[in-house]
Image (cartoon, rainbow, N blue to C red):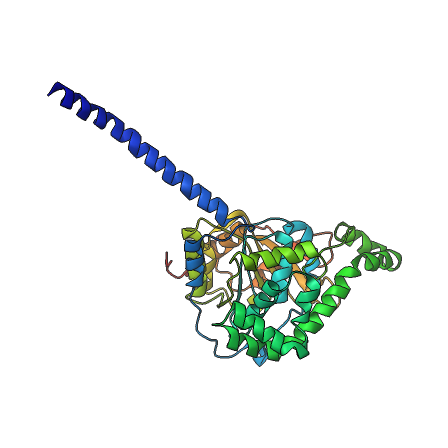
Length: 376
């Protein structure tokens, strides 16, 4: 009996140690998975893949802006952001097509969620994905966006994205000429930046001085630099790109993204709405969507606005703005501000032409704004 009692006592003593060991092992496994989730060079863990595959789309808009599909970006000076987002890492979500990959390559993003309320833009991203997956280098990638290579693109889509092949091929047929033209312009622009700087030094010394920090070295892109190209290809290979039809002011896509990130131990580093804020007011849904989004402490909003009084980066181009997500949340939580242009009047100009920071902290409104109920 004494021997049995002694063994029971020993088991009771060891039980807390066993429980502690199990808890420690669980924590270690969780930390390991979080590290894997945030490493773009590793396959995204399967359970996290499932979360992002399950992201739901918002309903189609009643009408597209100007009733047109924006197959390519018309912003020409994203390079002003390059020194500030270089190798930031983390999750990036953005509106549009080719410019999302410019930003993702520069920032070395660990996960990319291209999101546009035009489903044709979402569909075109699968054509991008098929081309990236099928091509080891830039030269081969570019061949998939030649009008006479429809059969080649179709074969790649059927191989890599059979469920999306039909809709992606339709988008490709409509947009391929514009995409190829945009690629040509980007290559010309970025390969000639150092030369442009030398000419600028002669013709406009002040503007040269304002942009010298950017142009002092070449700015690599996924269309001109194989290392940048490889970054985007690796993201597709490791199941880290999830195109989504979504609305920044919607009730589904943005909240699904936020919950999936939170459940996966991941955080948004860059949210790029492009110039979308030009077309809507800061309503209750939009406020909720941004406030609930799990951003990193260094999280940024990158936006553009085509208003001359703000200062344009290039003639007939856009103004480029950067704001911390933390600061943006304060504005949305505490003020009645209705739209972006009101806020940007308090921007801080930088020496770089057409680029501003936004860091002004607001005085809370007497009446709190309406914020939609959180969904998680």
